[in-house]
Length: 284
Image (cartoon, rainbow, N blue to C red; front, side):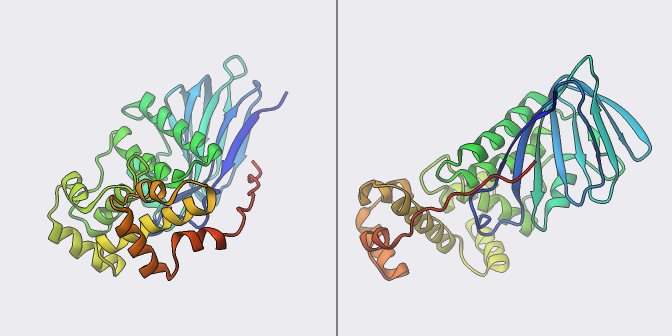
């Protein structure tokens, strides 16, 4: 018998606007009792063990690991990992992409010299990995932003404090995650973002404009119009309902902005939308 490796690729192309980090592939591997991998990777790939026990051999060290332990593949770092035949393992994993992937892996608590550790809240980390995997398989509307939200929550669950909010790049990353959150229609507004991050509107505007060359309000409007376009192309919902789902309180204001920014009405946009293309999953 062989391992059962169920993975899902990022089917929300292109990567989320403004994000320097995303997950191109996530998976769940269930061993049949003879799981053995020898890798010399060129990417970062965090893992969390769901059940069973195994051995990680890396940097001349040997680690015995079990449920709740984490390890990562590190570029150009040879690693051998296998389960124990009497205790087959199951684990979640995801590949990382983007310019901030190494900084992100380090924010979880990994280093090249220490690519194995146990998070502070293993059950919560397992739940976050599972949510990322399920979302990538099911591909719901706005799912890419739900994935980013879970991704940026992981350092805190691992016991690492998020980077200080007064760092411009990190503040903007967290602001983008809140804007792109799928938990509320259209994501958070400027007042909610400032309250969540503990900064003033002036600070948010200054950092946002310096890094992205646009204001938070303009970015939020563009994000909500993008959601509206996706809903118009993928559903037959009435325009008023689409306006609400995209985060607009007024259908009249939505219609005005849509025509202003996109040069056409929502109805015309719906008629012009091409059929959705199917995406095939990446190989294991």
